[in-house]
Image 1 (tube, rainbow, N blue to C red):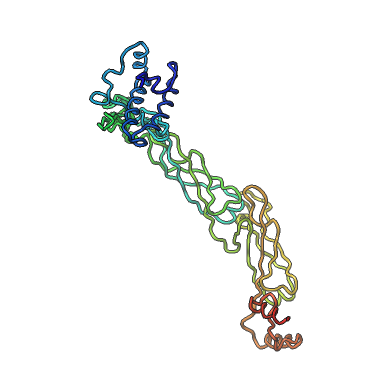
Image 2: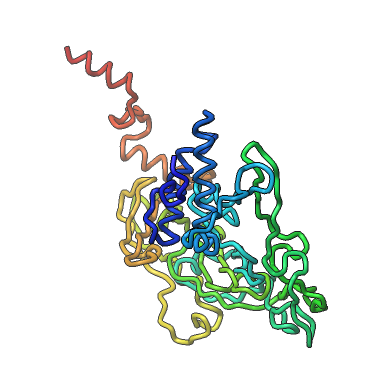
Length: 396
């Protein structure tokens, strides 16, 4: 087979570096010993690796194009070598220096900070109509002494003497393929390529310190337990004074003594004497907005707000226990639009203690209504499955 590196990789002589790399990746996937272990394929893999080492190096490629013998001494025995990063490049489409094809070289000291989460408990009325709250948060902030640089006054980072600023060091390992060279982060500088000889005493070279600060968060109307409000760039400042992450405020709504929430609807139960249920009456009930009104009659400090704090409902004569009235548009506002309903369930209360006169009057009423000895007939909707089946068979 030809020893021309261009023919081995199947590229024209004027191919650019990107075309050469793609050709090598394609062939390496096909010919790698882990995929095709036969000796002939291993030999072919060595040849394309030698060809790629020449054409990927501008100096070696120029020497070959001028007619120089760059194959001399490039056998896969003693003195030969190729970078394991190129093999990783072929299989994973990136470089071995980092995941997802990260660029080789020193990593930056400045990185984005982590997101932070804080839980906030609010009342049902505040969740329904929105509220502004002040929060005290404890997060990492930029060091005011070194302004995120991590160095003491008058000093600056110096190049690492171990990796000479590359942030990586090569490790050579012998294998049946020859010498495999891998790049690893420099342990002396932790991959930064530089060392801070005189770190800032306030932040110990990290560029950030922890601090407690006060933020104002606006909770929109319609939130519920589990809703998260995002405050962009209010989280942890990153190492080296890097950009801050986001702060998420997770809402927890405390139980309400009168109303319960189901979606955007409000539910409440009203106890009613049996006489009022039988004769009918008018009830005055508080609104959820009443929780927002302070002692001076203002909402959020604004006087004469005109918030409705109560409303009336008509209980019709003969109202049964468990019946419900639906008041449209008196529930919780939606996060985007609309407003839920208020569902009022009536619970008729039967007296448990009667004096002599009350008992006499009730017995007189029972006699008038012929209810002294009620039959206790089962209502159609109360029958179970077997009762309905029995009735169906009795029809035949």
